[in-house]
Length: 248
Image (cartoon, rainbow, N blue to C red):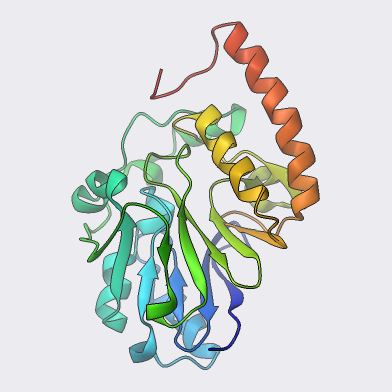
């Protein structure tokens, strides 16, 4: 089986919202963008020489509207099964995100007022239920789905044989990817401390790059330095009783 190649699929802007195409013996799509973006994603997949009927799986990293919004549509267009973590089945089955959103900073507080974040997506029923680390070799790529809870309870990332980590919203590019290469929090986390622990656990596996839902690929060493600063920031917030969390 050939090594897995990771190709970003911009869904909104140049890299404001991304899906990803994994190329191996068979192709796998990671994430499904906002509602109504299925055909846009598929057109880019086809542009990379992929027959839609060859797509073996659609992996959803978590239950937010900009990541599972077109999963049902992509399932119909390709026939591929959808994979999602059991802890985020509520959003997938209802088409609605768990609310309220818990902002990580000023951008999150601003975005939480955006009506587009509160729309209902078409519900989707994952046929492949993720509960723990799961190999994707049977689906044609040398990669593993890795549970990385914290952003949501059911967040997952995908680690390829080549060391590429498709990280969903474990970390993001600054200002929704508008500042290339600069790590930042995405606008929301259900549990910031748990998310940081998941991020550090993935960094301990020595990935060569982090491919994020918002922004261009991030350098792991730069993310490590950011994670150290984030640890200190969260500790100060927690000491002051100002750290929101669904787990709290």
